[in-house]
Length: 249
Image 1 (cartoon, rainbow, N blue to C red):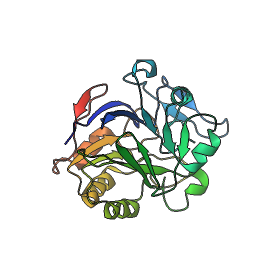
Image 2 (image 1 turned 30 degrees about the vertical axis):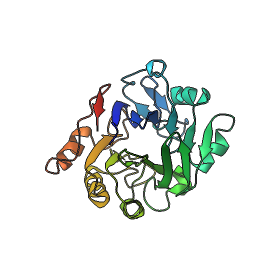
Image 3 (image 1 turned 120 degrees about the vertical axis):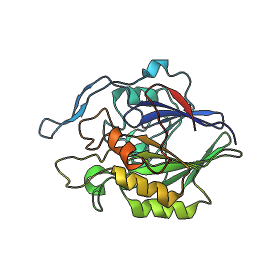
Image 4 (image 1 turned 90 degrees about the vertical axis):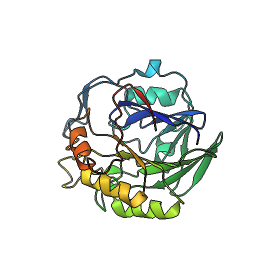
């Protein structure tokens, strides 16, 4: 198989090198700060990126699970999109972020770029019914000749949807899972996978390698990287992905 690498930037953001493409997940490159409307509890970012946006080098594609929350797309992330880099996201993101390179995909719709086929797969940001407050979200599956099949969960909290995705593909080799059990006061449930749910997602997918993102750098992540590692301690699937370091998957 062709070499696939990942470089963890922070929060949900990483650079994936896959089938000759350099791909960014949910771009967040701002320094620490606070976001939100005056009457709402703020989203608070506690750490900046391991690699600043302007030092990333060329980017061929952005996978944006959704656009409505700054912990998945912040101001510097918007600047990246404004360069015109092809960006795959929800249909709503394509409508709201018109004028750039944002391509909206429905669930199970595919998009080809280079040798890579990207399939948009379903996601649910929180418990059933939370779409009304939090908006639509999608995940992605990457396939290319001679390469592993890669699932990028985005901000998904639903194991039944993970089971659907597992059944739709011959195999998932690498699972990039957004964990951290994100929480906000308005919804009494995790909005992303808990650590134990991430372990179950890996089992459902029968993945041989798991990368954990979305476990640090924001105050509303209720579970840490350490808790994710503890959940996977006996599974032998979770790889270490230190900030700013490129690892081969």
